[in-house]
Length: 175
Image (tube, rainbow, N blue to C red; front, side):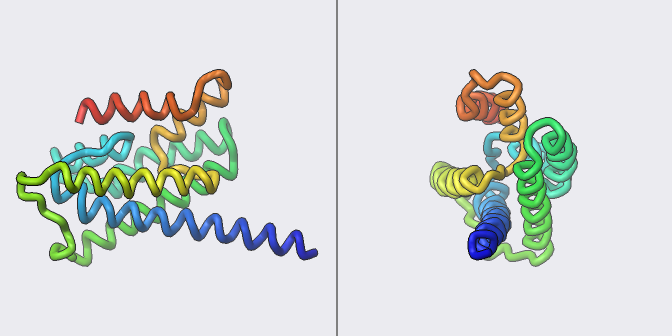
């Protein structure tokens, strides 16, 4: 009985951790990324570029991109992984929308074109931390991680991290 309770607590803690990481990434995007007009890697990088060009919120674009990928991953990759990634996507998107609605412009770091590397470094550290914690909890931030996980499942000889890096580097280069 104690083992079951401990396992349930660990699972719940894992979900809470994923939720916290989603909120942290939304804050990262709100404070550092969007304000300073750069796009990170991955499908959220594409969503960021779309927002710059059209004004269409990355929150909605993230949902449009990641919900179908999570559904596919549920059937083609791993159920628990896809459920946690979907949870991350939903919380991230809604947290970012809330930040936009609150209009906390005074929190945004504006490099004003002078020290543009500083917000990119801070954002990269935060994004790396979030991604690592999510992967440790059998989840991801969505997008290319889901694609990489699928590629790794059908071709186990491929390295998940190499595939993820390659896909994300291509998107970062485009941005």
